[in-house]
Length: 334
Length: 233
Ligand SMILES: [Fe+2]
Ligand SMILES: [Fe+2]
Image 1 (spheres, rainbow over the protein chains, first blue to last red):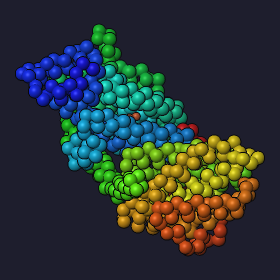
Image 2 (cartoon, chains in turn green, cyan; image 1 turned 30 degrees about the horizontal axis):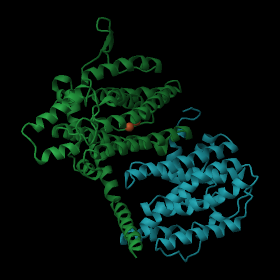
Image 3 (cartoon, rainbow over the protein chains, first blue to last red; image 1 turned 90 degrees about the horizontal axis):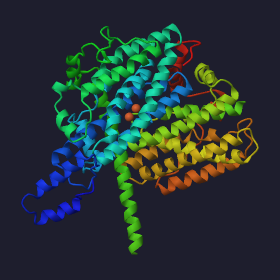
Image 4 (cartoon, chains in turn red, yellow; image 1 turned 60 degrees about the vertical axis):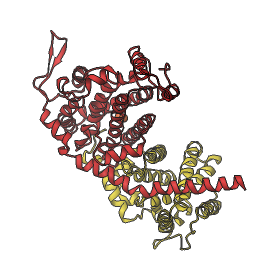
């Protein structure tokens, strides 16, 4: 969107005539409706800004907390090739965190502030990461299902109305699709391996399937932010639509993997042209959301500890930079 | 192929140690940087070990006494300053070593020419952090000084000639000392005065004598692979 910039807003604000806000809002609405991108300097409603910051922060937090369950297996990766793939993946997730915190920064909220909120438990991250990675196959299941669900969720965000977020998502989605394929390939190798490896793969899919379906959020009739986000084109499809799309993608892939999805009610519905699937345990979802999942405490504690134990390092970097800028400036004036 | 094993094990073991930082780094940028370095080293290790045999058999099925890495790289991470001190010592050594190898006619020339670019970045990363921590706050200065001193006694081993590595070891040693001394001084740190060797004879790691933490490190590294004999991953 280029119609109304922040500069013009500021000028208008000085002696703003009656109805100026309405005019700005109308221009914003028109831009969103016309699928134009909103850029950081454009005028935007406060609620749009707040909603974006909340969503981007949650997304960024998910990337960095999501490093933990997978990093759990780096030291035990069973081949050097897998170890390299896994390290690169965990590194990508850190990179995603960086892009997303930067994108949120364009709306005036810095990384430090968002991290403080995460550490204080005032902002969320995706609940999926509150489940443990118990075996090596979990690394594959996360790649296939969790990165897969993330892609289904995030591909539409590449067309999100907010420019910096949309652009970050384009880069991120490319990498997530690598992760998804690598996870699938890992599971395929296990599934076709020894009986013990096959069993390991099946067990991981059994444990990760349902939590993956929960990643799309509560059903549409119970989703608090959905309607407004859809109107603002921060969100483009409903939770249930995306969940259905994901199930339909996964069923043939599971078959190709030679693994079973743990849902006796899962079957093709000729009439709908989609799969029917069983009821999700929303009770469990709510419990994990409230902090009672298997790893909520562990994940947050590790994150806080890394941050606290790193504070002297960050302080040193700041002190060093200040000293040496001062020295350079001193030299310049001398 | 003692030489490929020695250099390959150095890279493999240090990569593993750096991988242990994942999810624990002091700042997000360092999650990326440390993983980068770990990945470079793992890449080098795989090329080198493959010159000797099957990379996975070598990494996962050898006993502790068969590893030929220097003891420096197996030292536990400690705090960030300790890790940076280890990086400074090792990356300076590795850059000088690979620079010489890249220009020589050894079987490692090709690998070294590629690796020297990576290692120059590792050294730059370590030097920048040494400066920031040494010349940052009182706390960071103290921690960096501790790290630099604690690991000093593992540095002598770096200059023990490795059979099959045809380079000028004396100039490697003097070049290393000069480079590290300059960085430490610029970082307002004291260059350690103690011996560059511990209680073991020089070159212990190269002969398969390691420190206690190494056994636990490879136990963790090898456990899953060894639990499924013959399986492919
Ligand atoms: Fe990601
Ligand atoms: Fe990913």
